[in-house]
Length: 254
Image 1 (cartoon, rainbow, N blue to C red):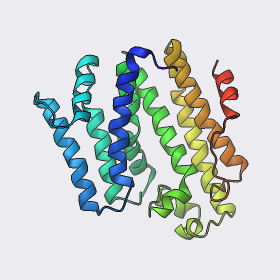
Image 2: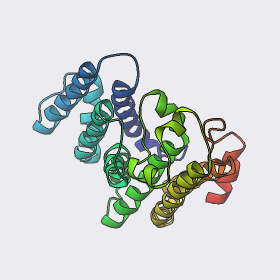
Image 3: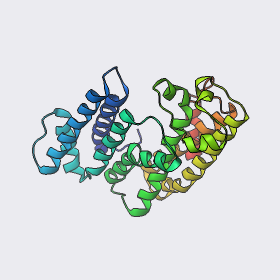
Image 4: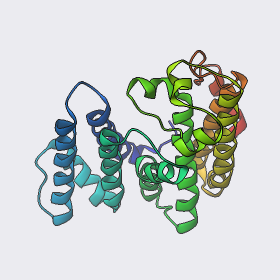
């Protein structure tokens, strides 16, 4: 409802691209080599668009059309593929810098594409959008610790786990002791600060786009509040936004 009619088709194409590419990395039982080959085929289609050669699939016909019609950069599409390929081969992150580098390619490109669609991609807006998108990706990591463990992925930085005395055994055994809670509180506080740095974007952009951003920010922070209220036990109480949360978020965003 919040996206203008003239832009909805482009948003759908971006979603189809990102969703299908992400599924190559995450869904099914295909071996790693096959997953990477599928993502490489997407890169080849982007290369065709970049060189002015007609794509070979209907999805990329649509990508080429929205890139042309809205003067979208191709780099965010390449960045998303880079992150999805990394998900196939990398399952642990040594430190927070490695993790935010991943977020810069797995989440930030979507925000940048939206800014370009709305013709609002100035330097300050991009910086704030990156902060919001990285925060949302981190929030997703913190709420999905147990789900990611089933995929043999740990997004909590290993360096910080060791600092707080947390091991992968905590995740395996769903063990929420004081060390676990201290680690998660640290992560959530840092994520809130990062989100606060990007939140002004929802006030500087006008109309429905600004409102959408404000709702998104409030929604991400609401997930963190729920996780904290559950004593950081996402194993038994995974925080999600429910139907009754949305009127509250909409009113706060207004």
